[in-house]
Image (tube, rainbow, N blue to C red; front, side):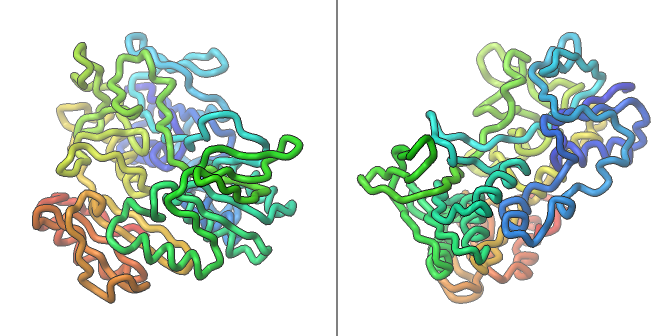
Amino acid sequence: MREVVVVGAGLAGVRACESLRAQGYTGALTVVSEEAELPYDRPPLTKQVVAGTLTEADIRLAGAEDFGARWVRGTAAVGLDRERRRVRLADGAELPYDGLVVATGARAREWPGKVPAGVLTVRGLDDVRALRAAVDGGAREVVVVGAGFVGVELASSLVGLGLGVRVTLVEPFGRPLRVLGGTVPDVVADAARRAGVVLRLGVGVTGFCAERGRVAGVELADGGVVPAALVVVAIGMVPATGWLLGSGLALPAGRVHCDERLFAREAGADGEAAAPDPRLVVAGDVARCDAVRSADGPVALEHWSNAAAQGELAARNLLVGPAGAKPYVHLPSFWTSAFGLRIKSVGLPGSGDRVVVEEGEPGSQKMVEVHYREGRLVGAVSVNLGKRLAGYARRLQEEREFPAAGAEVAG
């Protein structure tokens, strides 16, 4: 290979570039980034950057300028011609490639419909700048719609600023961080209330009311209205694969289907995934990998550790080709912090059918909940007892739920 193009300059893309050079690749390397920013780490955005404990400089990905790449910043990829091996850019330019790494990640899911000024989503650095500008400019009534990881982290960061920000967290589907199962969502809800956050759980949002074109409130399905000078919509992510439509790749649920070695699969005539493309690998949030699965089938992971590990292996496999490629083997892990709680997970706890508190007191702020499926360990979640997860990680590997994972518990 003499020309490799990496589309996406988040963690997965940067790790792929580092891996290419570490494996001895000396050819041309081009990195395409829709953002004009230097590469940065996303997890701190909704926590330390919003809270003001880390600066923009603190979250830059170290070494991103050191692998001798040609950078195309501020320009999105808008199309892919696999037959001619060309990536088409928004400015009309085309980039030829011998090997391609797709690491375009995901975008924040926007509210379905027109919204007034003051209704934001948060995914990138520009979004956080806009959020802090609004708060620093006097917005004191803030409503966060959606109590997944982004919503909970933002609510915690905003209420802890010490500026008198009053936060309402609205979750239509019942509990914050409900994907974790067990009693952890209830612990999070209690901690949020103690921090001063108003929770509106189990009630949907029907729209927004405005005054002079700017948001003034959030309209709820029960007929109520929550006053708001600022609204953050945190209702999930959408894989950034629109530019791949028409490329002939399999895109189930909008993600790029890749085999166990991270090579992208072509779309078959029957709509099912077919043979992999030996010149195209996938990494990070955009991937739907055959190697990452629960008993119910493939699982999409939007974890920091997954993006890092996939980026590194995808680049290695691209260089050696399918014959010498290694399968992706990774123990899923993540961590988050909010309202004084440090929550960590290993495995796939959301896929269990039974939850047992094996350490600490049920419903307390120090415990480990362990998830089983048909008697088999599938994952564990800790609250302020993160060091205890190492043993569960070993058990998952020993029981071959995640064989030879080799990944440390994130955090």
